[in-house]
Length: 346
Image 1: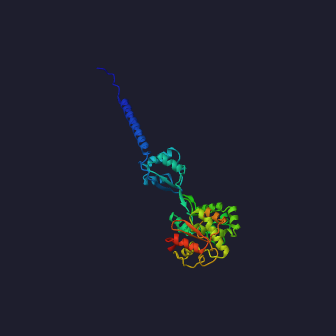
Image 2: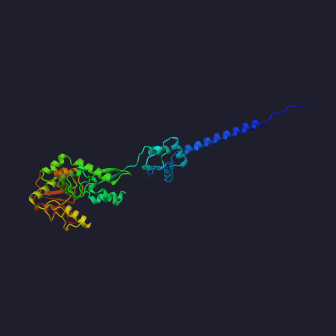
Image 3: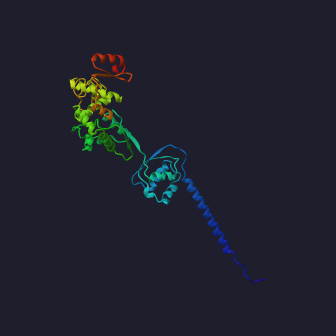
């Protein structure tokens, strides 16, 4: 019987265990990697837009929870791992964003790090009163308090658009109709200033000079332009309407403009009352009303600066949308009878 000791198999057992552990780790790593890659994919194919707002000072975890709550990412840990691995955590920017479930984590991170914030448009329409613009600002998300503060003329002292505005007058007539970009961080004062900037561009030295050459100060030219703006919608009619009003002013007639009467009634009572007596009732009071009745467009400013060379004294807007001009009251009454059966009876 041999006395040679048998070799122990323990080292091989250790090697086998190590191999098994390594294989398990490798498989686990591959599995985790696959899960990670899968979790970077879009949540689904939906193209619906989800608006989120990342507040200033938000941490990566805060942003992750926000995205997860809106079902824009598959996994919170995968999103955070991706951001950290790309070393872009400090590049995530505050703001309001429009995202979709069909976007991958990479696409979402690109949007957040590049600051591609969602932009909306706030539109000031032509022929709008200041009160209408105020209401639109409030309905777009601003508080009434901050809108009222933004509409105070003292906020814009020295603005070139306002150099002719009398002290104490409001911004009525000065907010130029245009569309302005609005984001979650846009203050109402920024929109008002942008509108005044546009008005300043339209009130060029040539426009101012053209208005004063007609015998009106610039502010009164804006008043007349606002009346023209409200009276007729067709640009080609406005210079003729301006001529009618100039002739009435120069011959001592009242302007007889319904739109000024309605403005005075709306401001004072909130109703449309053509019998209401206010300083804006140009059926009863001679000359121009004390202030503009709406904002104005470039066309109306040009019409007041360059009225038509016609010699009309009357006009009426017909039911068919056509403006009919007349030289005499008899002609005007005939035009009203023939073309304004509905509008003129309201």
